Structure formats: structure tokens, C-alpha cells
Image (tube, rainbow, N blue to C red; front, side, top):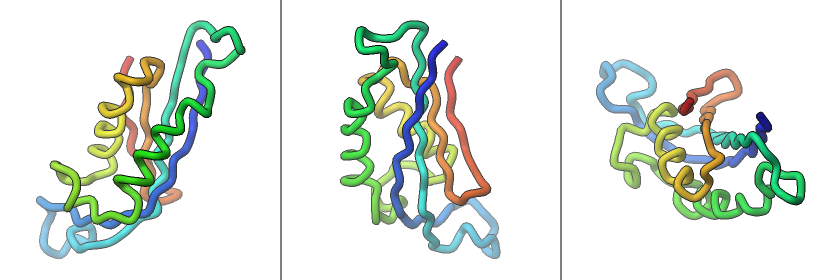
Length: 118
């Protein structure tokens, strides 16, 4: 199986609900997010790619237009945890990119949340 990945960076704020009042993540705060998309295929196309990285520009355009420098609570219909963001991005882009099988969202260099299908 061939696997490739590409990172997409954005900065955004959020406040997580359903946490104790004294939990730091309940307050409005921001992150420099990294969303990494993973694509796999048992075969390569005629060029020798799983996917041409240039074909992924629509992901960058979406991230830049809709997520970058936003308050995620204002634009997303769910509690904007890293886990929920990973699933959200998967659901948006998997119909267009059938090779997409995993999305990883990092809020800090030390934390990652992953949504993956078999």
C-alpha cells in the first residue's frame, strides 16, 4: 500500500463547552493548528503518484477561506475539539478524494487527534 500525506496549517480560536468552569480549555483560546491528510492506494496512477499534490489545492483553499483566523465556535455546528475537527475535515474531503483514509489534527506540537477509517 502506498501512503502520502500533506499538512495544512491554520490559526483559530475556540472555547470548549461541557467542561468544568475552571478548566482552561473552557475559556476562549487559540491554536496554530496542523491538519495532516493521509491518502493511500494499492496502485499508482500513470505518473507514479497516489495523488498529485497539486490536486489537493482545494483543501488549502478551504482551510484558508473557512478556518484560518476564525473563532471556530462561530462557524462549526459542534464542540470544536481536535477530534471533532479531524472527523469534520474527513467528511468534507473524502467524497472528493476517495484515497483519503486518515486525518490528524494537532493543536500543539505535543498533541494530536486522529480520525481514521479501515
